[in-house]
Length: 460
Image (cartoon, rainbow, N blue to C red; front, side, top):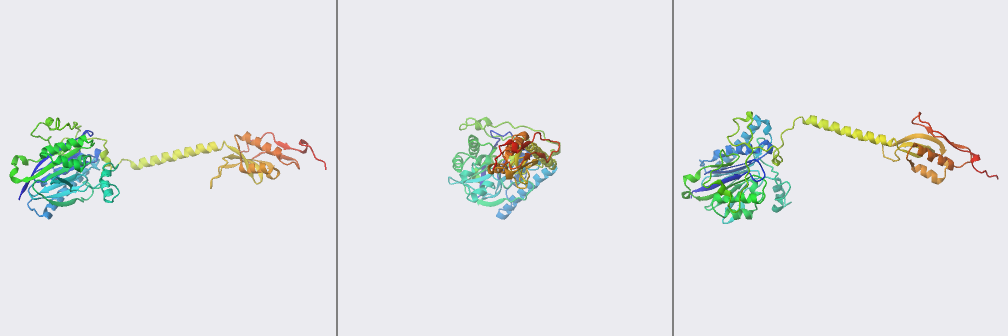
């Protein structure tokens, strides 16, 4: 038995973004969703360019052999990749742009899928939903390794990081597979703006109701109501007997950034969302931008929308090359060295204002610097030496000198030396005379002299 597809497609910019980087296409023989990545690198252009190439598949396949259909799908993906590469070659400012792609080619009995990225395809059959594509994302790799659960993946900080995309640089490594269709099957192709906030249970609930038009609208409304901060694109298609589909129901539909004109439904747009089970999608008017002269003729005739600062830049595509990167790094290195030198100079200047009394070669010595030991680094040097010998000091005074006597100033250190000279043993005259070893210009005033007349003598 030959089947036909009865389909509906809708794309909404969402409540947060100013531009729609999603693109979608639905036709009698082809369903496709692309989600542009790149932010300022024009993800909208990438998704629209990819749809422009993929939509050429929308014709009844001349051969229904699985290998032939997979070859056709793979060829379309490669043409999309080559076309994006041409755009980047023409305008290097587009470097970093890329897009996901999920498409299904129909031959009347089966669907041949091609899939790259994190847009998704679901099959709703016999009141049960099944995700038929597998995300090419970082969190999916964590799920496959058993490190996180599906529920944890929804809130993972890197849940939007994708590992594969059509970027015009890397070879396409798409998942390819076939699914035989049954009458009554319902298909959903959507961007991560919907699948990222609606779980399988909620998707199944919506897909179980109404026509494809109704289900597509309800999916978008529910995604926005669930708090998605991304664009939302949904394509819903029913597999029906070919006698149930008239020619007027087989008109191709292009939505999102690839649309030449906004979709015209059988009901006014205001009725599509307002009053529809609570909801206005809150669609924002796109911000128009002028088309650069060097892109004229390369951009399809759809509304250009830009957002110069967008988190999508970090989602997959590498950032555009930064100008003068080497010069900036050299300047940063010079600035860092300068800061380190200034800090070192300030520390050295402060250390040269510190004094302490210590021991050198058995004599009491005034040191300039810090009373600390650091392997390989001299933090102090002998500033003034005296003739006060540690051998003539009490054990307590000698140990104190060896440990170092901190002083608030040079004068304070000299007073400490005088106290030590006065306390030394007086078997013979001893004079404590500080002598400069580092700064000859510095002089030390009164010397401390210890003579026998200063103390009472003992007669044997």
